[in-house]
Length: 88
Image (cartoon, rainbow, N blue to C red; front, side, top):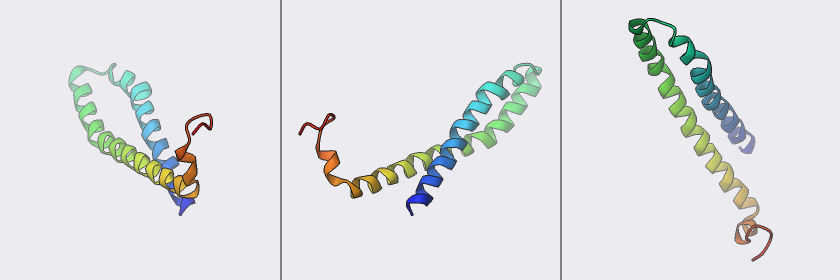
């Protein structure tokens, strides 16, 4: 179960960050070179695909991260009762 959750976390984090990076760094500059009518149509089409993909990836990344935190806490419950530096 732990390996599956870690895999889901890494896969969707990569999709979320990689997709956002690709859109901002690669696609957006290329879209700006198109005529306004074509640019709007292309951006609308890309948003219809990218928005759900990035939203689902973000949600699953955050959810799997929370699951991993709970798993870690269940293995080391005393670790959360001390402050940084080991002081009570």
